[in-house]
Length: 499
Image (cartoon, rainbow, N blue to C red):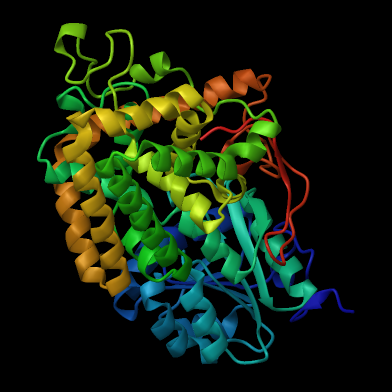
């Protein structure tokens, strides 16, 4: 067994002389490609070959002229011929045509990977166009380009490669100080379907259809409502294509988005029928299936108190004589929370354990979403209150109808596979919320920081992990007992989870 790939020691570090270092190739210099180039350069790697579209060659040379170790080349053919480890940093929608063009030029014995957020089309393209004499070890940093990679999950996928090839990839990426997560192509797409495909985009579309900001008429103010509004703003403040590829090109996402729409529809029908027994039975079965194991582990509540969350609301709770709903002045405004009921029902129907995905690849939005869902379902009084509101209080009935229509609309959009339709729906909703993005971004960031700070204190003041080896995204207190890269067969002991 050799410890070298193409003459490069697999345990090489950036401290090695330049002639002993691997040549690293980046094809695609968008935001993620540039982030990788910058971090690899700062780490000390001295042979980084990069390219973008040929028409951007001169512009890219100018942008990279002061970045040590980076060599800008005219196209992907030259990058592929010169590099020992090649990363395709292109959108999933275009990965097939880019690999078809440059893949056959790959250096003999090189390692090839991709940074695409959806791996199914990447896997197909690599298997179809790459020479048989190259290794396939893919990767995916599960965070945005403006987020420090320190402690963030970095998926490594050993697909068609030797152990030595994977070790060399780990050595190259280790200076990013991310937490390696070992998955297969299929398991990657299953996890990201839940954590990143945004089944819950329907909330924003429903509120936009009502043509009123949800926090301004008293229904969506404080506590759980604060989180739901913040989630909506975080989604629609992003670019449409961030989610389009995740939803449309990921087979697992299509299944989950379809089930989410089916769950919302099924629950709403039971509400209209006034069938308390069937509704309560269905939701309690979902509660048992999704949260029972966490209850047995003594898992504490993820969310902070509602009083603390109230500090980050865009609106103000109405006075008791102004409440638009029926509860007492001391209780929160009644709400069916249909979006949360549908999400947990969806997880139960598909046999998804969201805590596994939380520990592996949590995004800020998913941390918020699973936290508020657990907050509602773990307390029997809160869950019963949502059921009572759904059946007896009609103040949210119109919004719930719009939500069901929106969920079904997003499911149809994804099923059609139309990027243009997705873009039109997304941007129409985003335009409605755009005037308030600035305020909500500030409050949302403060809320997440307060939650993380409070969680660190509750966990003994440990804060984030310096190396990120066992703590996803800087979240304190998640302990891993096993990670099996062959099939997502692992156990996680969650002593304290934050979202």
